[in-house]
Length: 343
Image 1 (cartoon, rainbow, N blue to C red):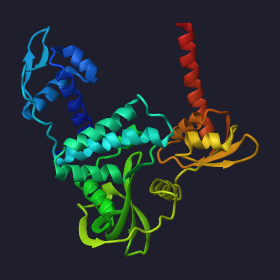
Image 2 (image 1 turned 45 degrees about the horizontal axis):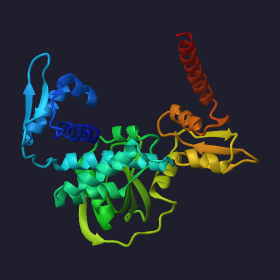
Image 3 (image 1 turned 90 degrees about the vertical axis):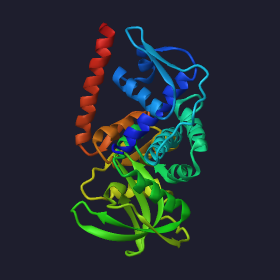
Image 4 (image 1 turned 90 degrees about the horizontal axis):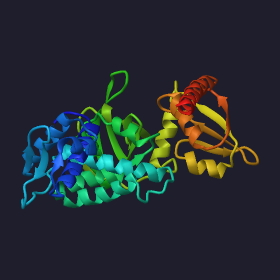
């Protein structure tokens, strides 16, 4: 099967949603059903065909007033997922749930709350083999992303690499794999994997490198083959940071060529830390003030997004080009507000 984890997660999630709607045993006009799912009619037809392939008796009525309905009295088979789809679906649900929690948001009655419920239901009905693989990915993944949507887009990697690495993290089992550096050089790695971290466009594994006797982070899209478990167990070492996500962020921030953003925020450190501490290092700077330091892995837009979430006035300390980004955003927001007022 081809496609990224995001593609497979979206397809499988839609299949679950479509099945849930059809199980009402009512007739759904095609246009209404497509609107409910947020897809084009052609995509809806493909999703219906997919359910039929899995054994669901979906009847179709052609024509302008056409639509879809499950055959009355049909005994529904369980939803079948292959290995890649199972991993993809669990990853998507896990990151959706974890994103809101990491930002300190209440999940009651929200999409993240629904993601938690769906994750529990989906893993319960999976065969034991898939449940083990998908459950390991869910349990061993930390999100350090600016947004879960961006971390979902990051996953153009082999699901077998992801699942095998997650199992090794969970089972505290040493693994070997070939790794390709940005320069194209290949090295052979023998590591004790600790945690997976989803950071915007990329997936990383934080591991202790036994050849270099030090902690390292590896991008999973650069792991050249599915890691090979060695059968050797290890006792987890103490992390050199509060958690895996913090270590990965700090390591990337220390990488030459990255841009460090610093700002003085007119709000108490404890308040700002609760709002954006997941993304930035917050330091008290006087009565009712603090500084925020961060190294966005992509663009300055995301630093500005985080500073806006602080909910207070701020002054840019560095870099100077961030002020240009602010001016551009400010002009666009002003035009938007003006057009609304004039409407």
